Image 1 (cartoon, rainbow, N blue to C red):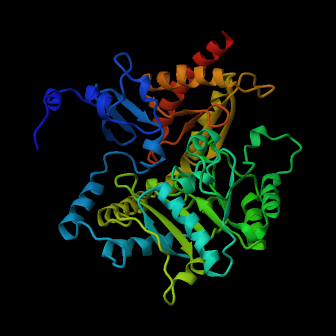
Image 2 (image 1 turned 90 degrees about the vertical axis):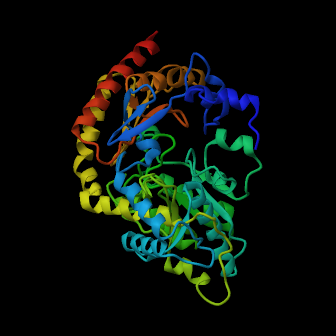
Image 3 (image 1 turned 180 degrees about the horizontal axis):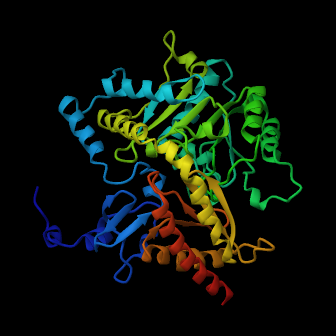
Length: 461
């Protein structure tokens, strides 16, 4: 194929110029980049750190995107992929199987709670949620209850970008530009305890799920989907008894309980499965991200025997799938990743060190802009406020200036990658690799203390 003159001119062009001309980044305001605002280009990683194209080092306080749980630079994961290529580069799971997918499915089932023994592979988080929602509908239809199609999720919760998953996502700004969405999404209050009145019953939000099921009509509701700790809005933890109550409600109304653990699984909360942290057994679990520590794209839906049962006999089929789901290379990487988890007891490390991590964040309360510190394991958020006594938050314009006008760039400039987010009230989120220890906690503290202190001065004017 002939190379155009424009393409010839690009030969030898730097990465920055090529990125600004050709790369379309996700969830990014592309118009904000230009001669005076470079696209951050990360070129390598090692342990808890990554390096940019200028050689500057950053503490990866977000684990890539809540997913590089075993840390960067684990060459043994690449070696596992290379060995797999020598044996089998690819085969589909559409009516066929291959050894690594079989072995990985059995390993996931051995780690999952209760009778979650059947594994349906995907290529990522949104695919896992989409698959779980389709399965919930299909399951009820197979039992002669085809009217059960609605899904109940929580306000501000993020469950993915595909149209089905987006119908469960409770963030207006992410939904509105793609409407009309897949019908059936219903939303209830989340568990942002910091914003609850002091006299509110701790199980109020769980009761709201029951009330919504009753309002919609139990005969129309297929599933409830919840994260163990809600990501969007800033690491909302459940009150004691919340998930036990939700489990009871789902059983009472013949509604499937989906635990969305795309973020919360694989040690993020100190357990392989986030539901184990809070003592509940769902019907379906969605997985992705740290399943391979993000060294290869992979996801999965783990399903109870009872939910899988209608599809395991006769000529019934779950007519759904993805070309690359359960890819041999990704499966091999996932197996090697779990070997690291077991050998180094990464879940145990998180449980042993989460108190120190939380205590470090709590010391930031000496800065008036810090309203709340919340989370579990290596998954925490700091909610920012204008007035700590009244819990007054920032309006949209103030939040825009605070987060995008100052915090995001300043944190990055000082060598800390984390998330400054306002899908809800403004928060700073932290989710370091599970290998992070006291040294990294101290670095995080020093950067946050300086930057949040300066942010408060700016708020004061």
